[in-house]
Image (cartoon, rainbow, N blue to C red; front, top):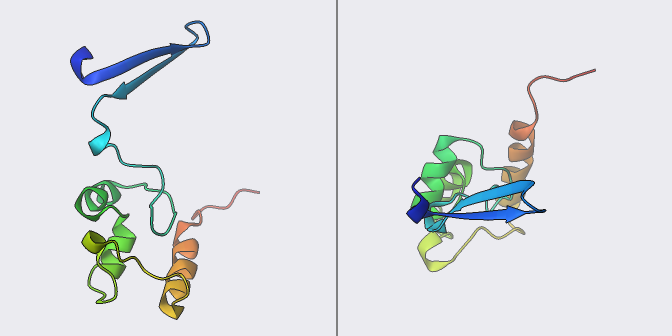
Length: 100
């Protein structure tokens, strides 16, 4: 990233340096705007740039006739299949290793 493509900001008297891109259209958010789970993988980044969601939401909802990302039609949180989907997402999001 060259200096012409980034913003540099110094905070707390130079103790913190924040470097961010000037063009934020390619920045992937930390959380999916639909399911609100963390965006963690390269697949999530690709899906976000394609339809604005994580890869799980893209895979599950893109072919649902009730949903249209381009028209702003998102899954309704009152749908039974939405509730089932979120329950499964919560299970998949848990750590595989438990610490004692």
